[in-house]
Image (cartoon, rainbow, N blue to C red; front, top):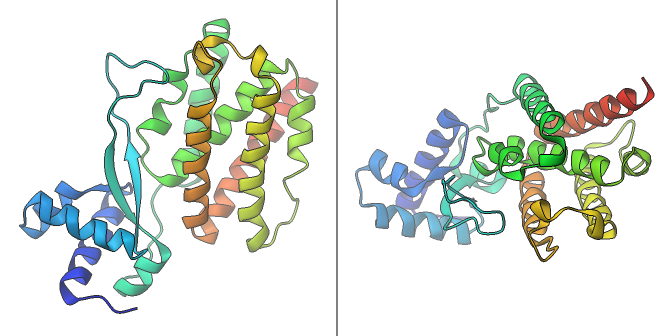
Amino acid sequence: MKITTRQKEFLQTLIDLYQQKGSPIHYSEVAKKMGVSKWTAYDMLQVLHKEGLLNVEYLIPESDNYKWGKLGRSTITFFPTKRGYSVSNLPQRKLSTKTAELNRLKKEIMQKFEKIKGKLNLKDLFKEALQTKSPLIFCACVLLILILLIKKITEGIAEIQLLSQVIPLDATNTYIELALIVFAGMCFGVLTKYINKIPNYVTGSNNNLDEYANYIQTYNQYVSQMDKEEQKSLLDFLKETLDEINKKKKT
């Protein structure tokens, strides 16, 4: 597809900032870099988004008045799509967030989950996801928290073992994306099945899973936009997490 020279400048600027920062970019950052007003940058990035060259992520700022189900006003940020990289003629460099960061995150969240037990506070567990550093981190957070929550409400690992059967031992690149999306969808199905056993501090007073549906929708979008290496990293993370949980139950 063809875009104007000016549009390409905005696209390339955003990609440069995204690769430096490793997380979605606010339009004010593009404005500052290019020496234009933030509204000019916002309008141009929205045009690029409508053309399928950028994707959007809504970040929810942490606040002292944080209440589950009442997250407050979100902030729109942008990151490039595969199509955006192609049109920009810039190489899609690998982001710094990889295995070490995923393992650190997993250890941190699992430790919190073990410590709080009956006093589960999803604000703490979702903190990393809500203030995401990258789509890969967001997706890893969502998967890990879904698994831990299912393990808790089902009081065992039978459901986890059934879910594990979705994960292929040797997946082709095409099936990796499908497996990641199907797994998250099945997790949501389990939460729906056991909704009466889920405490109010997880779903709100009305046993509403809308927030989870929103997270999974964003998760699916990110998985579809990942390159094959990132998808494989996420699948490896999922496999290792499931293996760890199954081994802990046996010991």
